[in-house]
Amino acid sequence: MRVIDADAVHQALDFPSLIGALRETFAQPAGMPQRQVFPLDDNHSDAFAVLPAWNQKTIAVKAFTYFPGNPKKSSELESLYSKILIFNRETGEPQALVDGTSVTYWRTAAVSALASQYLARSDAKHLLLFGTGRLAAFMALAHASVRPIEKITVWGRSDAKVDKTISAIQAGAPQIEVKACDDLPLAVAAADIISCATGAPSPLFDSAWVSPGTHVDLVGNHHHDRRECDSELITRAEVYVDAKVNVFAEAGELLIPVSEGVFELSQVKGELADLCRGTLSPRLDSPDQNAPDQDAPRQDSSRSGNHAITLFKSVGTALADLVGAQLVYEKQAQR
Image (cartoon, rainbow, N blue to C red; front, side, top):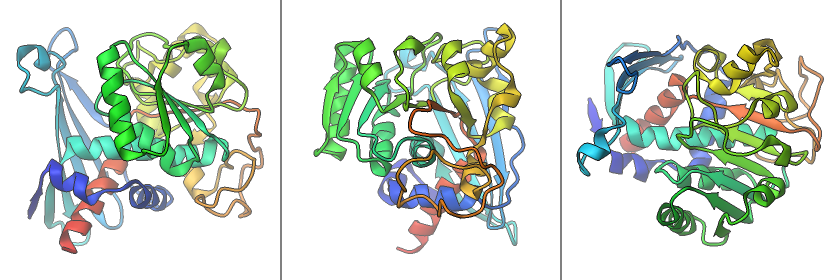
């Protein structure tokens, strides 16, 4: 059994191959029970989680710990530690123990980019990024790998972290103009894609600022009583999720509007897998050469036009962890 560390994960993965593998896997049958998150204290801050999944090739389980107070205890401590164990589906033989934290960065961003292939306008050029954590640059570069992004605006509460995030994005995409956000209402109104990857407990912007045709991507929150957008945006948008089994149990972006009586979970258009299988139609505009055949028969004939606001809410799935870890393992085996 191989033990694969974070450096090897970063060397092995790239967004085109990972996004392609995710699309292929999400379109096929798979098993994925609801992930289990166990609070370790009365304040529900420290937590331990287990995420299982399997398909015809691989069985995987990710386990992670979340201790948000760690950075205050020591600069050498991370708030999240994660490992993914994968097994051969045919024999049950253990194949690899893969660093889960690095895979999570890649697969979270790649899942959002895959959703953007279906839901963002194919001519989307301006990305507004909320967040300056370690995931932020991955999110920007993933979206830029599937859409012709020419400008990225970065919003954050720390100028130093904003500058660091800008430098990280420019290192990966020097051809893109990357700037700090100095006028939030204007940036929201001008954005073609808004991607939020923060720990914010309350809405980051006023939904009234969001222009028709915008795609909104929300990945930062997985608490039922917190949210990165307001209820009005949920009611205005066509809402899609990575997996109902997890989002419907954890995402305050949907659960708070439900509790307010302004939204029902039945109004969610569908899951990412539905888009990958072709049982839900993507946004209707100019064809996307990276997406599957948009002329293929579909069960759902309603299609989003250029003026629709689309919204993708993700809390993370074990199946995406499986894909990332398996792809790393296969590339390692080829060396």
